[in-house]
Length: 221
View 1 (spheres, one colour):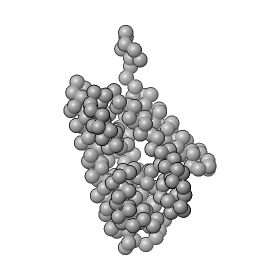
View 2 (tube, helix red, strand yellow):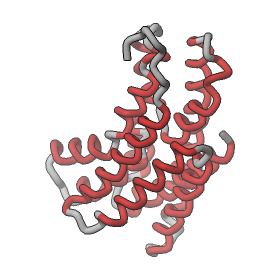
View 3 (cartoon, one colour):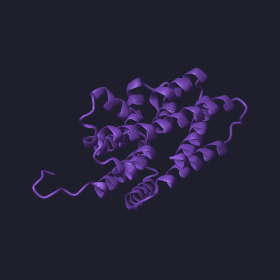
View 4 (cartoon, one colour):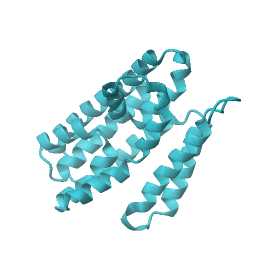
């Protein structure tokens, strides 16, 4: 998980800088990071917050940016179904893109131990959370000494590429990246960035279908 956590750390730095440059105070930026825990939602909502958009518009935008987590939750729902509701909510809130990819790669080692699988899931995503918070705090601190430049946005792109590269371990991951990348490119000019949301959902759906376990004879689907 170290490579993905390092990518998350640098993505957090870029996001922290972006939030300060966008007009948030250090307290607001760090507070948003701790509570929201989603760079995609934060950066999607930030321009709307700056422009004074209505709260329902901001909420809807953040929800659309995070729809992929519905699919992530569906993938792991059966594995944690017997855990207390509060713990399931905690695991759901900790879920990250890189974390769930790493978990799915290693979960077979704990196939018959749901509580240990939950510990594995929490540990992987908890490491990501720590890297995200620490990176964002450093970004917030550094923002005041950095000039306004488009190159800062490119640094964020490099961090995302590092995260994606660490997750390309099998055929479903490559299919996810290929489908999402192609759709995002073709739909660049769609209004309200709807092409980006379509790309996220399509890529996640393809990976979900490819990782679905075959139904055993005599058992319901």
